[in-house]
Image 1 (spheres, helix red, strand yellow):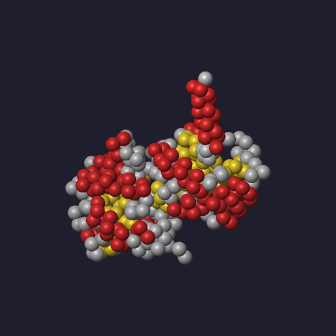
Image 2 (image 1 turned 120 degrees about the vertical axis):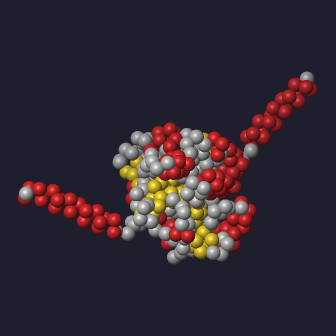
Length: 164
Length: 210
């Protein structure tokens, strides 16, 4: 009986622990095929896709602007997606840790590809491969713009306003 | 007779257009494969100035824009050393150029470059492009960014390859397509480069702030 009670208590404790643990904003690991599918998503939504990495200083500088945009347009068909170019081996130690530390609210995915040459041109021939880079698109409305540059908050908001 | 003259006129026009086009300085997008590359005179980590013209016997150069602060550049350091050690004896030495502004990226200061060159025992020059003029002229946008140039019979330098080292930045042992090596092998054996443009993810160049 006590054994059963202990087991019950232990399971309850476990349940409680997992439930109270900070719900880590999760990062999904994707391949280029997934990114391509996103780029072709026919939804009437403006996707704001930013390419960044935890080791990229100018990227990190502009992340708060993307977070602000995510917040500002949360009730509108605007979706911010932060595509991390970090190595997949670093997904826990660096990417998840970074997301928790910064409390990132935007959706984060990690693109697990080691050969940029195999996919960059298929996504955007104008892109040299330097990050940060950002693309916005609404396929339903035929809107698209690509920027290979660090942006100010005003530039990002203007870009979204222009296409949303 | 008259009929024969017309194609000649066309030909002359084409030549003229060609001459005009080649006289136009590189656009803000920089060099494309086939363009003539300019030489430079930049300060090496040993304090001496280095130009491509200093290498009388070279058949060309692996001009590599790279830096201390970018993890992709660091991941490729050993492979750059290997490229130099393999291809310098075949006439293609590597010249590394750090394009980053030290104010924006302190880890790319001249002193930090000297430290890194010593630590890694770079067998090639590691130059500072303090004005960023060469970086802009070549059109480099990220680190690492490689331009393989080939010396022509008239002494000029022609861009033969622009791109990356290989297809796996994380692990040299797992690289299957060694883009730069393939291009160099073709150049060394007098063949045209079959894949003269490749791309990779890299760190943006840290431009001077206005």
